[in-house]
Amino acid sequence: MLVVLLHAMESARDHLGSGYVLYSGAAGVDIFFAISGFIMVVTTAPSWGAHGAGAAFMERRLIRLVPLYWLATCMRLGLLLVFPGLVRHTKLHLWHTIASFLFIPAWNFAHIPSPVLPVGWTLSYELLFYILFATALIFSCRPIRWATGLLLLAVGIGYFRTPAWGAAPVILNSVLIEFIFGMAIGYATLRGIRLSKSTAAPVFLVALAVLVSTDIARAGSPPRVLLWGIPAAIILLASVSVEEQVARPLAGLPNTLGDASYAIYLFHIFALEAMWVAFDKFHLTPHIGDITAIVCGTAVSALLGVATHFYVEKPMMELIRSKIPSRRMHPAPSVSRPEALPLVR
Image (cartoon, rainbow, N blue to C red; front, side, top):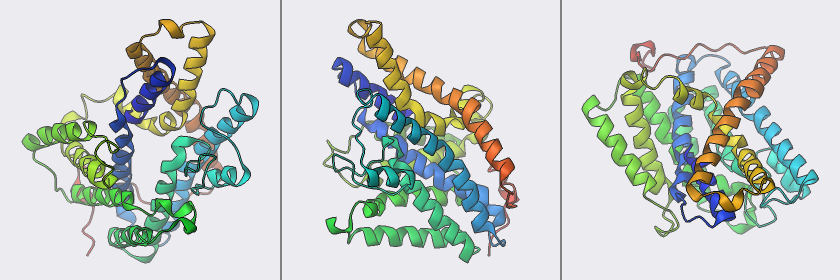
């Protein structure tokens, strides 16, 4: 939702000249990378060392990641071909289009390594992490160690990158360390290591304040993993530490937004573009205030994402899983029951 808020603010800036832009909303991606590392550990822990764990993991991640992204990318291509004036900041060429479907970073028309669906740039990082984590599951009963080593190796290789390497290696950078933060927090949580109840809330608030008050460009472009990755990891750790206390009060809407987060992320740009088309068609743009436009854009994006989750994503996942024989994996333990995870020696 931080990312959605940022893009809603940027769309209000582009259409209305709004000065309200929370550039640190981009740090929602860093929180997500940490969460991703956390979830991969929690969901696979009981299967560590089991035969076929790596293949089963990769199969499930591809089913979760690929179909909805391909659908959103096809929609983006369709809009660009049919209504090129409606799709901002996108032009087509063949390799860039192919690479977009394959999660391979490629230079776009502006020489930026962004896919046809611009928000899809983060998925290249996700897929690389999945591949490295699956490799770790295949070769070790201690995948966190292997995955950490492989991620650090990728970052190390990235330091030697030159323009001659092309666009694909741009993902070999220190942002990958944010997945390591999440994996470490996941394992610590399963072992029962958490912040105390009295500490977690203030730590969360301080980390969130630090995160949202920073802007990489204005801060002199320090490494993203330092400016946003560390606060993102602390936010995750503090959140997990108070899970039992907030689970009931935060049931309902937040859980729904969480379940629909992938759909919201992929489709919110369509919602924002459609909203401004509607405003222009009904001559409302000159009368819409900055705050109203931002609130409407954020709300419409969330609604479209939730609808897409329930009426497109879930049925599509059920159909695909019914057609593909499932590889067996043990269910994930509850993070509230660390004893569910046997210590891997």
